[in-house]
Length: 212
Image (tube, rainbow, N blue to C red):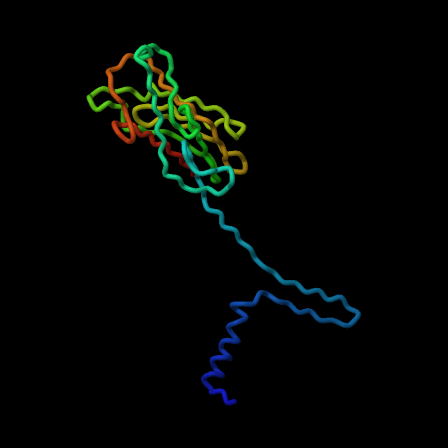
C-alpha cells in the first residue's frame, strides 16, 4: 500500500506533537546488572478555591452539607395583637418563619476572613394611610442553633443598622448560625391598619453580609 508524501508529512507532524499533549514526564536510568538505578517523574498539582460567602435568613438551602445553593424564598413574619393587648407594653410573638412562631434560621458560611453583617429598611412600616410603626419596635433575639456561638442579629432601624462584625479564626473560615426570634415590642397605641405586608409599605428588610 502506497502512502502519499503529504500523508507521511501529516503523520510525522502528529507524532511529534503527541508527546507534548498526551504524555507526562518520563525518565529512564540505566546501569550494570548489579547496580540499583533509580528513576523519577514529577507531577504538579493546583487547587483553585474561590471566595465564598453564604448568608441565610429564613427559608433557604441546607448549609451544613457543604453543598451551598441559592434559594429565593422570602418569609413573612406577622404580629397580631388583640384589642386588649394593643400598646400594653407586652411583647407580641410572631407567626411565620421557617422555624415557625416568628423564628428564622440565620446562618453565615465564609472563607475569606472577617464578615460584616447589617440590615437595611427603606423606612418605618406604613399602613398606607400615613401612619407608621418604627422598625425599632421589632426586636430580634439570637439563640444557638448548631454552632457553639449564636450568630448575632443586627438591631433593626428605619434605615441601615449598625454593623455586626464576625471575626474569623486563624483558618479564615466562618460557619455560624442561630435561631432569630422576632417580636413586636408593642410599646404604644397606634392607629388601626396593616403595617407592612409582602414587600409593601416599607415591609422588606435586606440583610447584607460582606467580607474582604
